[in-house]
Length: 184
Image (cartoon, rainbow, N blue to C red; front, side):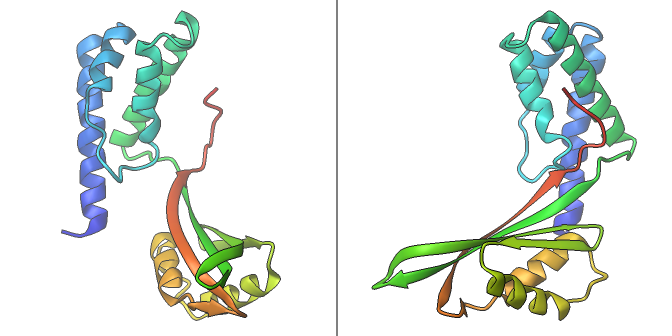
């Protein structure tokens, strides 16, 4: 089974478990959140579902007060419902890359490169223009019509170990929700 199918399946199972708690508790948001808080959040779930457990924890801990708790309970219910009906929030992919200058195996200074990709649109940010230039050139050699996630993985796989004396130090890829409405 592929990574994508596993991810959809575990996200759907988590959302279904949350929906079961919602259905069981109705408007008793404290009880519902206590149940949701005890549902194990699997790794690599869709980022749209990540805040559900955090909201539930805050409600159980009574961090915000009754009026805000009711608002966040409605957000939990809405997110779960939307996810289960296939109305997923848009996401964007980020890659953080760090290159650095080493002396005798010790990192002396470094430059980060942030790559943001959403809907095949890619932006690059760094304090080092040469890094941007090199990575953009590499990105041009990758199939632009694949998913944003696979584009990022393909790009990171092609990164040079060294750019103008700067050595590749680390890479990280993450996905984040692009909010379409204000959750506050």
